[in-house]
Length: 125
Image 1 (cartoon, rainbow, N blue to C red):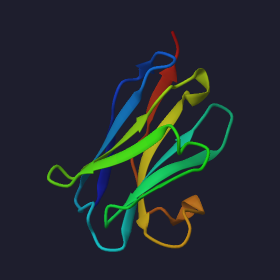
Image 2: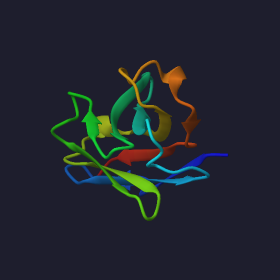
Image 3: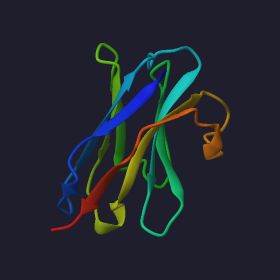
Image 4: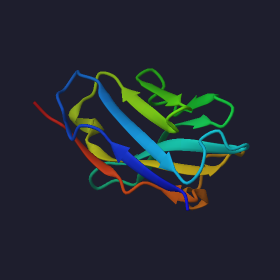
């Protein structure tokens, strides 16, 4: 059974960098035709797809976050990470990592087979 676990600081100061890691167990992040995404939900808002790293190493980002986000991976440790620069209070959200078959669209969110439990990140001084 594939399980995902997010980890990282729960509090980040404005203008700093947010770093989160998703450790995957029970499956490989290099599984063919599979992708691993970061998704967040801000208070009172719906889910927002942020970006993904596909099985072949290619990365994809939401246009609204492309200038600030970076998704990396460590295949030896079977994890992938999110870095988000220059955070503001608007980046306060529950951050999820999730896995889905690599396809032509990152939506709908019901296509994701595996989800982490989510981790709360608050941006505040």
